[in-house]
Image 1 (cartoon, one colour):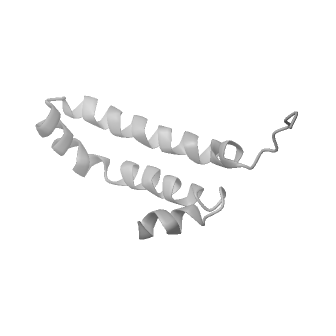
Image 2 (cartoon, helix red, strand yellow):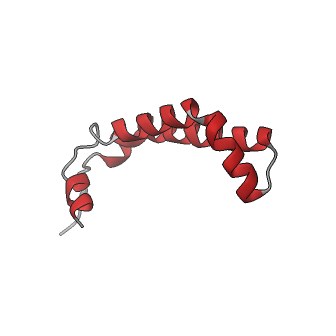
Length: 79
């Protein structure tokens, strides 16, 4: 609950930093993480590294678009 409350107080720009950090860590630790993925999921080392790279790209993508997706929008109604 406390984590949710802390996260909900962050503005969209502040929420970008954890995604960028996760992408960085996935890339930095790829060679240590890949064997775990291989062992748990039966993937080759190359497949595991590609999956980690894809996860890092997804983090980069959401970090890039988060401010736009999370901004407040005024919605016109007929009320």
